[in-house]
Length: 210
Image (cartoon, rainbow, N blue to C red; front, side, top):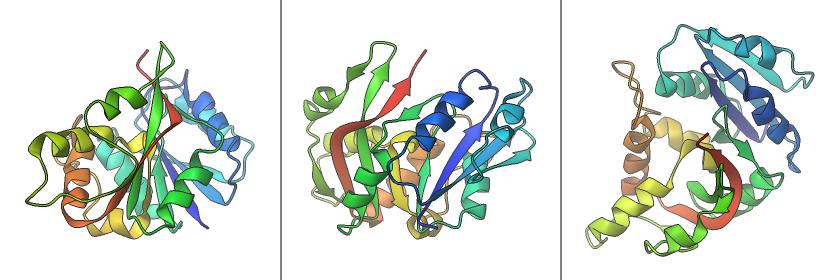
């Protein structure tokens, strides 16, 4: 198995089918999908379980937050690489193919560009104005604090592909105290301080704020 796709699910019954459809439409097909039902009460887990794709499996747990849900998927992942798609977001068909091509150049993680909805606009110029560009990056004592903040903000679970061993090496997502936000930044900052990551400004995902 090349890639493990982890989808945390909490009361997103209206969107999970769309997310799964975007994974099924990928041009790269050597992957598994692990949906972590984080105590949903709206029937979303049943929607995911009804998927006809044999690569999709659903694991259920009491509601403990997004970090714990992603870590549950991480524990059961068998892929060399790992991606975390949120249940209300989508990938473009070439997301896995293009992200994997960047990773295989030697990076530990790649953060990809995205379109923001409901307006559907690309965020590429927004991030370029904040100093980001395509290529390899690693924080050091010489890194501008402003650039470090912007680079960290650019990385979101639903738009990254990473080496599974790297996510495990740095302890996965923060989950203590049923953390509901910032659990990803806690992990990504550790990775930025210790690993070389890649930035791909080309939009490959759809981030929904609706």
